Image 1 (tube, rainbow, N blue to C red):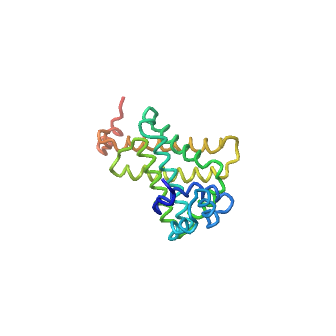
Image 2: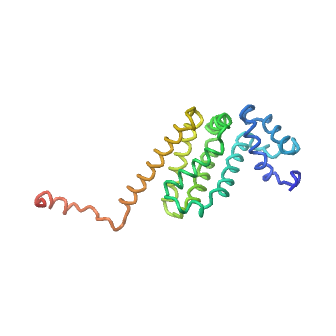
Image 3: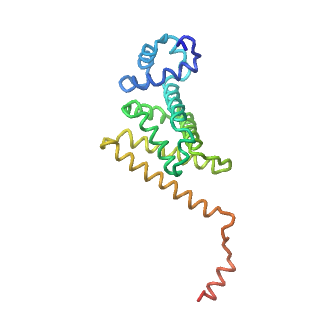
Length: 219
């Protein structure tokens, strides 16, 4: 499809990867947007119109959405189905890290913009959406409160891992990988404990039984 035929929403996504590349040097700015437009062969004025209402934050969210979409294509549920759940989650987060490798400075600047008070609500929503995509690809079908707790926890882990990633100068990002492994294992431990305590078939605590055992301890 010709670039000129793209809708503004389609153009935003088409421009996003190029903006991220330019943001390494120019930040999430009009200069980065112009460079991406030239690279794509789009009219600069139309490109600016696509981000007229939300500027830098809009560019960042479009970039994140392109990563979400590509991840869905590259790691569909059937490809992850043979893995244990912890490996699915780890693979999905690692995929996202690999997708931005080499663009750490753009990511660092993006995180700073997302942390601004005026952008907090949208940043949280964006992180939640990415976590939701990852859990769905991992095969999660929960519809009760587990749906929300899983996504909130994963969004938190992903955000923390990104913070480690942008500052990690170890060989092959070894420190980031180790950090991610620890956090994923922590989630799995939490899920096991939660399942145990919320299991309706679990023996419930009985004060009478407890007092009886104190008085007549098992031999």
